[in-house]
Length: 79
Figure 1: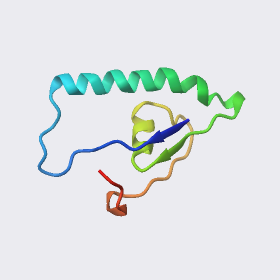
Figure 2 (figure 1 turned 120 degrees about the horizontal axis):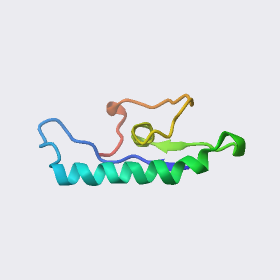
Figure 3 (figure 1 turned 180 degrees about the vertical axis):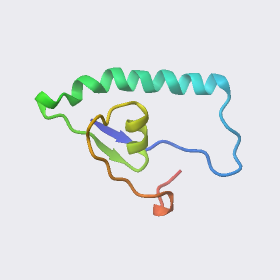
């Protein structure tokens, strides 16, 4: 499973409204439901993320017992 990073708020930006947050939650649930079968330990499933994709995987509950490494925001990851 490959996940690319997503845009995050920058300091001073307004937080998303309730409709936008509801859409984010629906997307995370879909990602969890679609990704979980691909990551079966029996099948040797792996997660590969780019930039903040690791945070997306964690928020969607896809990391499970896996270890994860990521770099900080100062890494130059495009926002």
